[in-house]
Length: 516
Ligand code: ATP
Image 1 (cartoon, helix red, strand yellow):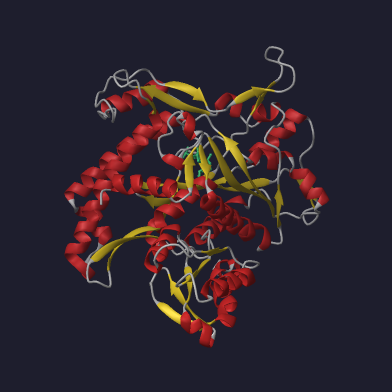
Image 2 (cartoon, protein in one colour):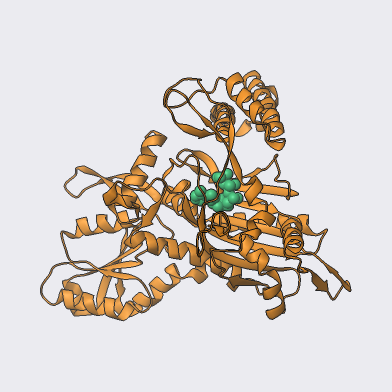
């Protein structure tokens, strides 16, 4: 299936099965804003729980915070967002569509990179076990030529971005013959800077005086509370503060479903460390965060790091964790070494000391910060993209059928088990209801007695329910039921009294956290 089609199917599936709806749909929607439906909200909550517990439960020296969305406007001056939270935008004069100039160039780079990867994969298949990838990359003329092209473009791009040279960004687009995907033309406007922060007014609306911003990241709420938490929690460096919350960005281009939204949610953790140790901690968190992603079991080969060549002015190291989405490898999470930039800026702008007294060193200093920052919604899309599958299966009558299945990790699944009486009579529904009643305190259960058992299984597969329990006539005699596994479709007969233990082991967050 073409990757574009896969993506369309994901979007349709999310809508059809109550995961994600376009916001304000009956009014024709609101661009790049989405609502989460009955299953979506459960999945989202489970993702947040997995992140939160991996931070706050597993680390004695990481604590949580929930800071307000509205903050003093000077915070955004101090953080640099008022002056520099810009994206370079460019319009195509024919299609009248707006693009991020940097993204157009990044996509061009990705195209070249794709060509190289395809060449390598082909050779890998051809040569089998004897394949020497390093040598192939160094000697194959097509790969060498494309690599040179990539390096040259990347160097030029980084230089232009680093010096905020907007006319050079435009020139790169022209020189590389990048066309508008809609009109196919190269009729581009100049590149302009566009600030991504939403603003509103607080209190009376005297001109200019009461302007406040909707936060574009949750991190600043952590920085300005750094001393509150450190003092009241008697935290010793190194320590971390974790927060989950909404963020808002007036994204220029927002055409990729919940990948890029104007209102979204972030999970951020700032880790405060002794100056000079930050790169060691950067490496530790890089490793820890990759493990967190890979513990979900979606295949290590689908993740990679993308180290930044262009560093923000406050950072001395940065990397992205990328996942292989149907539309290519894309960032899911950023890990940044932000030095002491933010705390120093807030110290300067607020006039309040934001220092830590290190009892071991006997001196005060502004800590350095490692940040891990992941979007809940983007992670949600990653999980759905990884879990979605279509399979050809043989039916009992010999014909075949397509089964749509969401192979969600059990802990993340919105519904853990569906309990189904085989028929709606002979006392079977009562037994099913009693099982739901007994288990609902521990797991999200669903009672389902509509349609044939086969259709009910299909419905639960599409929602991603990992276990279906079926009650049949044998249950009346021996108190056993069948448990059907979503992924293998295998069935097993087990005793009702053992159900709780069997399922608990499989869906418990502890099982997942122990992998970290
Ligand atoms: P991008 O380059 O994709 O715009 P970014 O580098 O600006 O992202 P960060 O500021 O590092 O992103 O934000 C951290 C994380 O927040 C990202 O890795 C992503 O998961 C999420 N995120 C950022 N912007 C959005 C958005 N508009 N919609 C959904 N998630 C977002």
